[in-house]
Image (tube, rainbow, N blue to C red; front, side, top):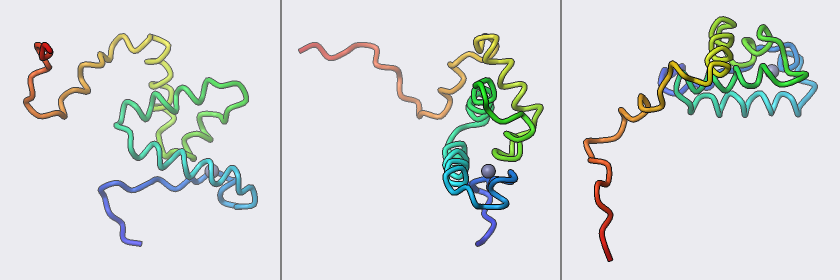
Length: 109
Ligand SMILES: [Zn+2]
């Protein structure tokens, strides 16, 4: 177990996982964190913000323990979703790809 900074998956710190008896929940939390580790930062908070809105879902406090995100961050994700992500244009996400121009003209057959 070397602590590598690259893509460390957060380990759930909720009570259920500490006790470890509810295997289904433990596994679910593991998967959540695995999933979250593949998302970028805004995606993470939106996902958790979304989860927090579901009826019967864990409190922000719990979600924070589960996912390692701040309660503040979770609240922010929820607020952004409620605002329909108006302040966070999806264009931003593009910066990863190389300098490939977006297919201007489809090849005509
Ligand atoms: Zn857990």
